[in-house]
Image (cartoon, rainbow, N blue to C red; front, side, top):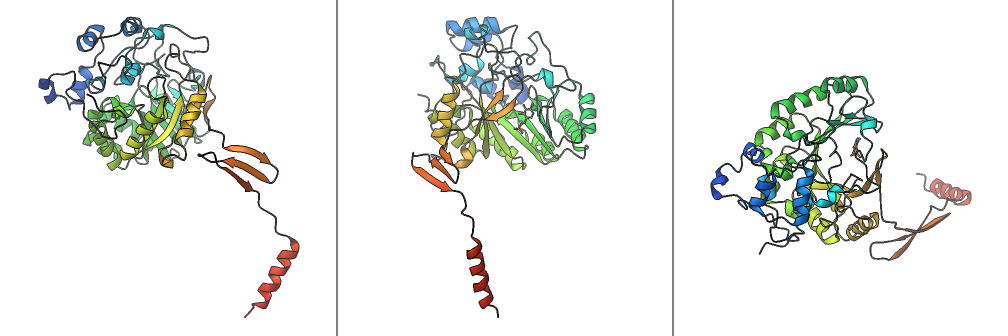
Length: 397
Ligand SMILES: *Cc1c(COP(=O)(O)O)cnc(C)c1O
């Protein structure tokens, strides 16, 4: 029997669906990339697909490619058609339907690009898309319109134009590298990219958004960590959704990044049938803290085309945060956000702890439902001040 997903242990799932002969090459990330599961034949040779998955795979071919690293594929429970790993990576027939509220560019990124691949939405920071490829493809990808190379639209990039824009825009102090997955670039290309960014004096802060530590922990080599370490202050935001994803290999890779002095955050997406319960979220955030990763954002799933089967209501997200706040470590609690459809940026959503607010007093509830009042400060009177002055005078030496 497979261990419970709520068990805090870090478990390796290798060799799983692969033969023990493959274990010699297992730790080589290039082997992992070459052996990704990306065809229906390969997929069906390893697990029995349900009808909704089989049809989903056939439909996915010209939208968002299917691709799953052997490491991540091994997390699939073949006995469980509702397996939370399958739901994230194996296409389903529901993807073929576009609900009326859905959009191909849900966060309005294409209209906020001053140069191709550079999204400048906020006053002091930019999102720099540096590749259109990932180690594996999440079915709810907010950028599915441009990643994986099989859709109609392609990601336009012009690094030189982006560098020149950043050099000119002295208000930009924070650059977030994303894509695609920047850690799929070679060490030397990444090194040159980071060196170039670091040569711009007003850029104080650089971070990388990556799911590689989860999909392909073998990529987190000592050489990569040594190179990244040269470019501090550098943060990494990883992306993980379910406690089963935190295997012993992932924990070790994250440990190497943390040992290189890289502060780590996690971004999760709230997904129906994957992590839409307090129990699963709690197990996830507790394991993240054990890996020295601070939960950063919990995203309400973007309104990406074909995602209705993976989305929840916002009320469900709020109740998950209520189930965490006060009940566990404050460091473990991510900020729940909605990325405003059409380009509003990230908007925080919080349970309401303010029961009443009147002039002079706020009434609050705590995580257990207890009611507390917090009054505004009472101004000190002139008479009291005078009195205090008198007292002070009498104590003069
Ligand atoms: C998420 C995002 C950022 C970074 O936002 P933070 O709240 O600072 O993490 C910057 N630019 C764009 C376009 C983004 O979507």
